[in-house]
Length: 148
Image: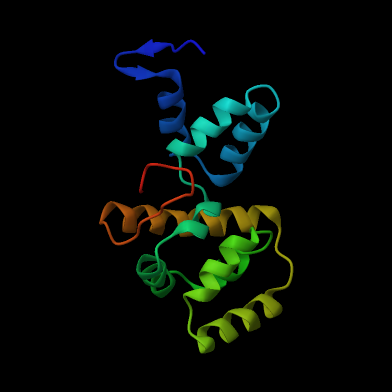
């Protein structure tokens, strides 16, 4: 694949940088649009951006810190439709009492609109970015040589 250079950056790096500032819905739309014709580009982009699904690979201490900061309502909404690996990692890093509170909140809230799920995930990922920048949370995805 040919690389287009703009300064010292490839087009892929520029797109990844733009996507870091987009909301979840926009990123899903971009990745979904590219997946059929350019799956290798999607794989490479995923290496450069952090998505909600990557919480499946968050370190325990960092994830526990995140869970102390975010609102239980946002967590309950954000988990709707989340991959099981995300659910398992979050549950494994919660106390039994907190997990029971989360289950009650999920039941109380019922089904949320997609826009509400996206907004909750965006709020959580903003906190994730802060924790990662301060080196309080790390994400190590499988088959990835980078630790975020």
